[in-house]
Image (cartoon, rainbow, N blue to C red; front, side, top):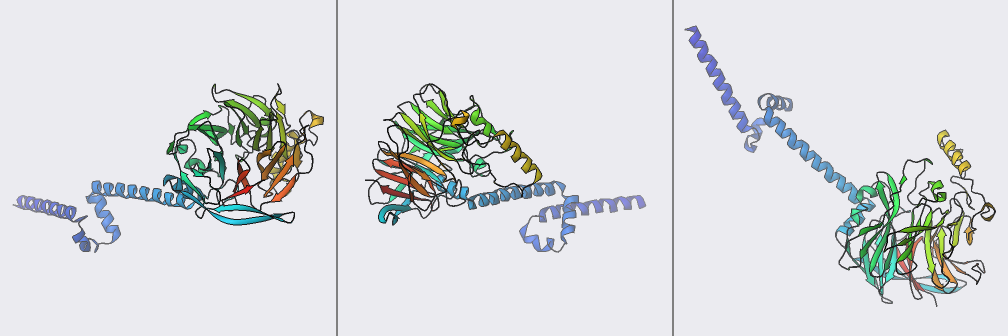
Amino acid sequence: MNINSNKKTFFKTILFISLIYLFLNFVVGQRHYNNIINLFPENIKISISKIFFPIKYIKNLKSEINYLKTEIEYQKGQVDQAKPYGHDIKIKNRLKDLNYSQVKSEFIYQGKKIKIQKFLNYDPFLRGIQNTLPGSAYLDIYDDKIFIVSTIGILGYSSLFKDENLNFKQIENNIENYLNIKHFKRNKTYSIRDIKLHNNKVFLSFTEEVQENCWATSVLWAKLNYQKLKFEKLFSPSECVKVENIDEEFNASQSGGRIVFIDEYNFLLSTGDYRVRYLAQERESVFGKIIKFNIKDKKHIIVSMGHRNPQGLLFDDKKKLALSTEHGPMGGDEVNIIHLDKNEVLNFGWPIASYGEHYPKSVESYGEEFVKRINENRKKYPLLKSHKENGFIEPLKFYTPSVGMSEIVKIKDGNYFFSTMKDKSIYFFELNESNEINNEPIRIEIGERIRDIAARDNEYYMFLEDTGSIARFVIN
């Protein structure tokens, strides 16, 4: 009798627990039972879920983890959008027009008022190369249109009409296949370095991550299409500069990247040393060089070596020579003349000879390891002051302290000017028949860092980095 009674009690208990289990299983997650559920303390609710509903508990945990992952990615995206590259990526993705409104401006030279037209974009690029804000850009003129490209690859064009605004229509492109947000996050010096249009093609130089943490100055090209540009690699060296290297220094702002065509199929490309100085004197290396590249056979030869960071490049078709402007270290900025008819590689001396000095001037305030490395590099790279006496070519002109040279352009036969970033000025000079500078270059202060110049006849357009604006002036 007792056994039967116990069995009944046991089965009743099992039935009761089962009913409770089914009831709770139904109640959990039902909104209208939330008031009942909320009567239990949080730790009791969690314990009940773990013990009685482990599968549902695990499922809920997985859902919560996935939600948190999504939220983290969303918040990361919000942070990216708040950064300069995020702002510029948004402009690029939306194919937003770039409108530069004209503002009258003037500067004074020798008591005369010289008018320039300045064009401001009230929603400018934000990602700069040197400045944190606003952004940098490069310019070129082709087929009566001015083209602009930002550091991340926003690319547009505007018709050129005197006394009107510059309204750039964006061109969709695939630059992000080669240079994108993963690079922008690491360093602002990973960027587009120049734009050149030639024979209905668009050419862009950029800092390319050839291998992981190993960089080079490369060139993309695309057939000109005003709706969409599909870029492909044209020049991408197998050699690259590692961030961790024998000199224990690396700087992608020393990448050169200037492009200039010398005939229908050949262009010159400047490359920097990325602050791995010995490469400029390695004859087989493409770094610290000016290279001649043929777009038909895709082959290149080295024209000159011993360059630190050539930022400007000009071909004078009448004189059959090139002029380059180059950043020195601390002082020693150079204008160099490159004779293209020589059957030898011209050597301009860096880093053995320079009229500049190594950074930093004083090392006393730095740590022991830093001082040791700097002193070792100073022994390896003595920066001898005379180029000629040490077997190198003297610069046409050098500047100490540095002026931060950028582009160089030709005005007319024998007359040129170059722009500067650090000095925020332009310098006019003349070459005589012996290809020497006749007089001290004439300096005119603009008041902003000048990243690039594009020329059409006697019109000159400058990209000004301190305001992210474009300035136009005419030389009569």
